[in-house]
Length: 78
Image (cartoon, rainbow, N blue to C red; front, side, top):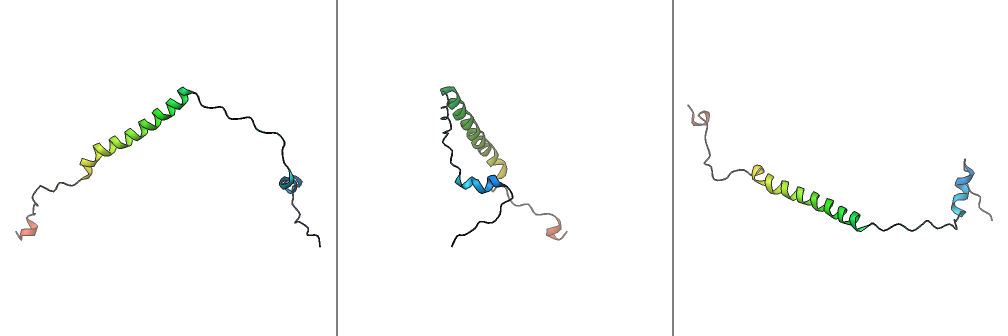
């Protein structure tokens, strides 16, 4: 008829599901214009750094395709 809950070692855990607070948290303050501009500038700097490193690093990562293949003397049978 009545279902009993398992015993909980701490009483506040058993009561936590029934507790409702009537105190609302204060509203969050909006960021100022300077803070918003600073966040955008930081994000733009990070994106520009990643893009710049890719642009500068891609030539170093690519293999040259115009150079003729050189054979060693061992492959010529000498």
